Length: 196
Image (cartoon, rainbow, N blue to C red):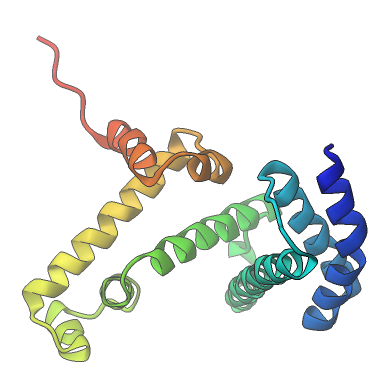
């Protein structure tokens, strides 16, 4: 551990913990997020010229982590509400529920990275089972454009599925450029030539 990191941690951890606790209103979640923020800095060191610059960076990073936590909790609650409405025999095991929640989180992240019209068209067409024309009328685009939007989102879904099947974790895909991650995914979903 470098002296810069120890100095940063010593001077700003208590402040960040208090700020995140104020933001979340939960001491346990605040402790986890403050810890995770400094783990990120440990794995990806940054240099700050002033204490204000360090606090500004930490606050921005922690705020993003708070938003991610709220989004994840919202997805989890929606899933739990859906499960509660299911008859008893169809309730999934805890492991299956965890896998579904992880998949929902991955899909949510993927949709947020798409342009808004592409994401909306995909959700309306696939999840809401709207026709191309209904989606087109809602988005004020042509039905042909809706098909292009949905195809683009489906390609992203296939690449996500391929990355997960290839065993690439979020950390691995974050370390790769988007082009490298897409090439790995493309290799996973490209059919191999038939052997004769």
